[in-house]
Length: 307
Image 1 (cartoon, rainbow, N blue to C red):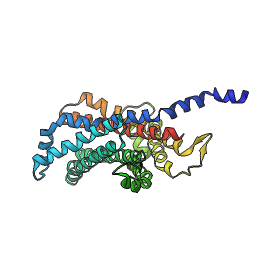
Image 2 (spheres, rainbow, N blue to C red):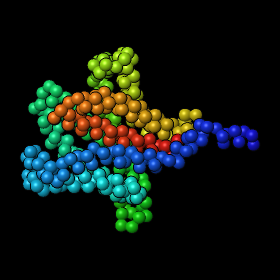
Image 3 (cartoon, rainbow, N blue to C red):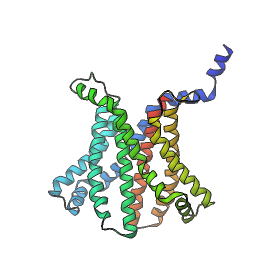
Image 4 (tube, one colour):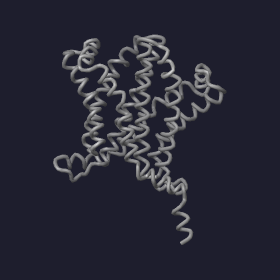
């Protein structure tokens, strides 16, 4: 009985038990953070702004396309937020799908097409924005997979559809996680440790060789842990904890730390001192990085109860 009492008072067990009980709360925090960039875009542009963008991109029927863009971007983001608030998985799924559709069209028209004709720094900006959008799309796909698992096949009207998608939900979530971290893996493969060291030296980090190495490790190891965690055998454990959950949470935390430092150095500080289009680029990139952090928080919240 003394051993049982000692185990019950173990600080680590108490700490883990508390977080396991509050995993849903972490998802509820991650959802609004993930939607930040879309809500900002909706508030900044409004319907007429989206119509102007559709006209500039030479879409047919720009008034209609612009209205649909505003609806799918802003309306979809609001649906996700409301769905998370009232615990309505179907509303979250519908909203996330709308935002994914908007993101595909916006990425193709706003970044992929201009990429072929852009040069120099302008091309780099489109590449970065396109990579961020791929990661954001992965966050949304992962969220869709998670919310499908919350649906019941006995639900009226949609029961047969739910029964079809339930076995696919883990795979959908895994694809989302892969897309989330793919830009980090791609950047790591392109830059390598030397490239990250050069970036650290450019931004004036102390001990740039060590800072660059740590940035490489946090981005690449964190990405690998997030990607590989679903493929670990479910029976594997790290001490008393589930290996899949611990691996995913550790990887997501590493990426959050990397993103916070990279966002501050690469976008927040330049945003404060720049003006015009350059300032807007840094502000939008910063918002996208914050939203990706929201996706990482969702991973942590989803996996906490499984620890």
